[in-house]
Length: 183
Image 1: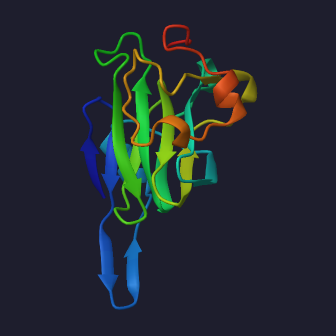
Image 2 (image 1 turned 90 degrees about the vertical axis):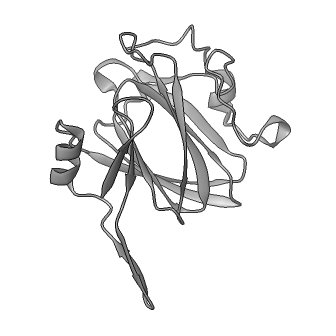
């Protein structure tokens, strides 16, 4: 596995070694010992989640606050998305900045997002199957959401306007970056 640090320290792109032949391909997607060595800390994932979404669906920007915060390792099994992580760590030199990475079944990349970040993704293909590991249980009472289009964050989502598909929760319960609880 190749670990590539992004412009925000602690957020990594993971590129697996892919072995291809006439039958198809094989790749290792996760090995805890190697991952923890590369991260320089222990991350123990406790839950896997998966979603399927259609073109234009935008999920995010989500996070869990306090003791229920989560680190995530995300990837796409089918289709293509742009994945975004927003730094909510007040003491970080990259506070308020974001990274955007294209993840697809074709490029087989993964993105590691540590605790202290809001996370979201938008589907670029007709459909996408998205999966992620988290290092803490889902706690609905600690769930928070920041507006995907908050101008102070400045995310340039590839699909805009009426073609963006949001959940009712993301439409009605998301707050501005300034109002959001930080770490």
